Image 1 (cartoon, rainbow, N blue to C red):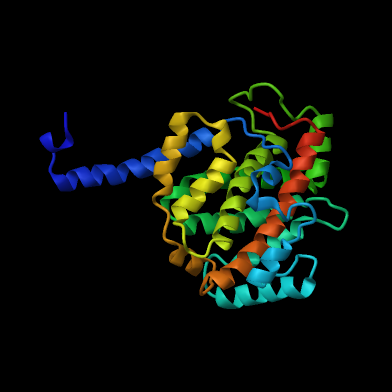
Image 2 (cartoon, helix red, strand yellow):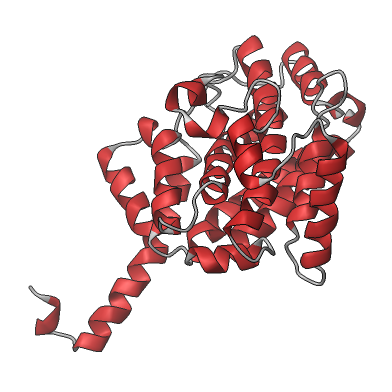
Length: 300
């Protein structure tokens, strides 16, 4: 029966608006349970997000066009952090803090410090919350995962959880990792918990890249959808992909996105976001290598 047959037009619109957050809830509950393991250098095949993957360096063409520097260039990195903290002063989300946290994750000997990884995600959650309903539910789920990792880090075996590598070594040697279906009464292992966050990080990385390399010609919903299609969508059913498309429609326009990251225009956004993305890419790749090395990309 048509909606107009039993409610007025305004009620129909209210019902439609309610459907968006409901579909988002369903989507992210599903995303947390599916298998997702993109190849380590998949984004080289896909193109844009990881042309700068190998050494954590922004492509030459991006440096020239956007004025961004390399993460190897300390002066440029510090300049971006300083300007971001200044422009975002007083705001809950400050992209400079998120950049610092991701940049601090990786040590000189290519280890990922779990404490800094957790802190980087705390900042990333603030970014997601600023986007509105579309990311609220995944951020709430991520808070739960952060708490699980923090409890392991603060626990009696916390020294074994100092880095992602040491965490994997400890959990594999002590039978903490469950390669079968997770029992309902058992706390997920650190490896399983981090893997779910690792999967979500790739989507958000590519989304940030799309914003930083798009001069305002595309809608944020289109940029987020493109990031989704290059990462998560390959592993989802047709129905889930349609649900995602609807959820992305709730994203704010790119002008609002610029305000969130405390920049005035596309030129500034390019510098700040590409520098941030490079830090995320390095963390993602080092983490991915460890999951591949330990054959744990399919943890249930």
